[in-house]
Length: 192
Picture 1: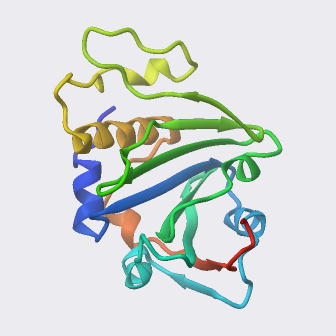
Picture 2 (picture 1 turned 90 degrees about the vertical axis):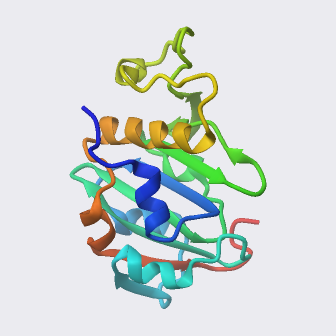
């Protein structure tokens, strides 16, 4: 199963040029995840991602998240402003969580992290050609996503996003940007 479109190119096309932080959390209740994030209830806007991107400020102190259904059984949490979420808290009560993080100017591409039931479990990156994949329950999704040793970070990021698409059953596509989610501000200092 492959996406017809480059996942990272789609994100860039819609404004994520410098920094991207996305979480895919098992469970189909975006409101529960917003509650777990301790969002400010009065600072809520139902909108599509293109509208949410008006507040895109990846290096700002204020944390703003766009939360919405990804597929039945999966919710996406995308950082619009600021870049940090409490992965352990969001994955409590037996939920699985996958995190993709890219920062062009600071750390580059980070490993594809997998959390479950409030704990970090493993990095589930696709392997480089000629290397063996880490033995995780997600290694079966790596077929065809193996990375060339001289792959750019952007190519690796596309592979990470394709892997997420395989696991959750949905790739990023044009409809993903026009689907309605909820934009939330996370109060300053609440997670410090």
